[in-house]
Length: 305
Image 1 (cartoon, rainbow, N blue to C red):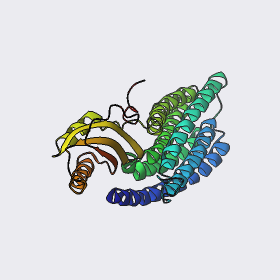
Image 2 (image 1 turned 30 degrees about the horizontal axis):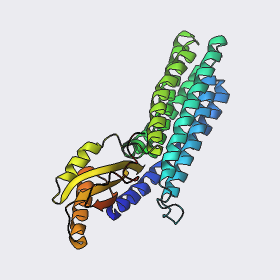
Image 3 (image 1 turned 45 degrees about the vertical axis):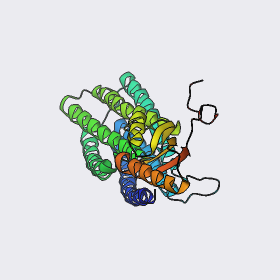
Image 4 (image 1 turned 180 degrees about the vertical axis):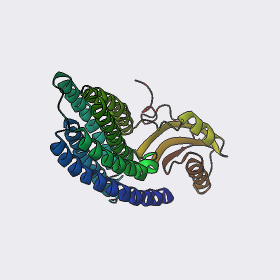
């Protein structure tokens, strides 16, 4: 497990640097878009500034979660604070859903009473925001594939980018045609795109908190692989879960041939090696047995009621 923990800590340091850069970009653009929205009388820009302010808070939450996750385990928190990243991801996903609700509400208000907008200034500020958001996306893109917390921050940046594109498109159309109704239409489209990623993030983080099996791993496949190890007769009572992004754990009972304890340690070593190399599972708890355990209440833990 030590190698997996070291890799996880190294990755956490890199992710924290990326998040801090994204946080600085988002915080700066919040101020720029707010000032630009007030000067241009653009409700779209002001709304996007509010969106980015919420994203700034969410990114700050992600940074705090990463720092917490690096704290060592203790007697009361034997897994440390790794789950702080998952909680931050759940919070970010929930915030994104609420942002979508706000966007839909604002879109309705604009249908009822379309605002007058200075299209030129609106267009310029939105273009600056687009460039900044694209840079933030490039910073977080690779890490978002492996870390759920960074994925939440990445989705926030992606939502900001889509918003900037929508504001730019709205500004161009308003300048060219004067048709202000395009503003709420674009807002609804932006909200739907953000909502899709947000719901997925909430479901994925909820699965981790509910100790669900990681989607890329299969319990039957793992059990069959362990049965192929010499000395292992059967594998049962298997539990597989995610501690945090990229850190997986497994516990199971191994029915082995009757042998001395000293020779049994070789089986444990081979099982751990197979779990690590074939499936990327860095933490395992193995119970060795030489007889069936149908009468044990522990073995019935995973049976349906």
